[in-house]
Image 1 (cartoon, helix red, strand yellow):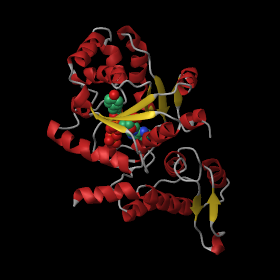
Image 2 (tube, rainbow, N blue to C red; image 1 turned 60 degrees about the vertical axis):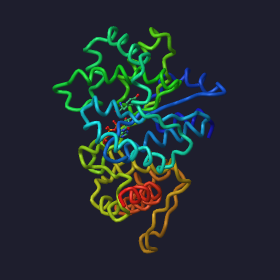
Image 3 (cartoon, rainbow, N blue to C red; image 1 turned 90 degrees about the vertical axis):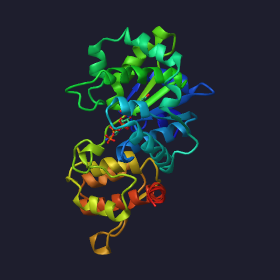
Image 4 (cartoon, protein in one colour; image 1 turned 120 degrees about the vertical axis):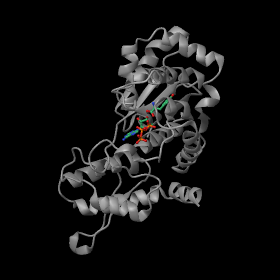
Length: 317
Ligand SMILES: Nc1ncnc2c1ncn2[C@@H]1O[C@H](COP(=O)(O)OP(=O)(O)OP(=O)(O)O)[C@@H](O)[C@H]1O
Ligand SMILES: N[C@@H](Cc1ccc(O)cc1)C(=O)O
């Protein structure tokens, strides 16, 4: 697979494809994703982590921002609670397989006079209306937003030149903040970033996977818990809106060369699939039973998350 294919596979949107092609021709290039320190790293986050791994393989230097100040501004906890989670999440992200990335803690770079002056300059350019709308899918309790949640997207914009990155990866829920960045960074004398947006995946109940909804598979789940969750998971006979197939597409296949569906001989014996497209076609044609698909999904996830799970266990003991 060439670099362009690696970067663009399994994405929802690239802004813009031309700019990405130009960037790929540069000898050095940097990309980042920011994560608010939160309870557990889950399969939703893993979609973006997988994309960062793709980008590393495509020749990018990868930066991960542990956005502790953003989590605070977004009312996710006290400074103390967030501080503890920041270290833990960093180690979990690394243990998910993202090796050789540079990790930056938000407060280490966001409290300088230069950064703060740039934030204030943009505050004077961006309307409250735009700032609020950019937080639609990112902000917590946005029915009654705080001023801190208006500063949040402006800071996310200034993070881009501060980290000196050429590209930003995020779920498609980050789109409106990224569009603000593209529009306003030139007025501070910076180039707009190339934005790579990944799809939002559903939890095992078919709704957006989110810690707050309790519908996640996370790095803290034991193999037994994963098995249990798989048994209960929503897995309709069709492809559309099927969370198990999404896990295969965005979490498993980007990382493994083959998936085996294990079945006794009387139910057709084992079947091997080398690509998501083949697996999806077989499932759509009724050649794989939902129970067998779910069991294979659980086995693959257990293997994929083994290192991260081991880290979580060592952290807790
Ligand atoms: N369900 C999901 N599917 C795909 N990407 C996701 C999902 N949830 C979060 N992400 C992505 O992970 C990155 C970090 O997001 P963030 O730290 O805000 O997670 P979150 O939405 O707070 O998750 P949670 O509330 O479950 O902890 C963002 O780029 C976001 O788009
Ligand atoms: N907005 C991201 C977190 C983030 C914060 C700062 C950034 O520069 C980038 C990303 C989220 O929803 O979690």
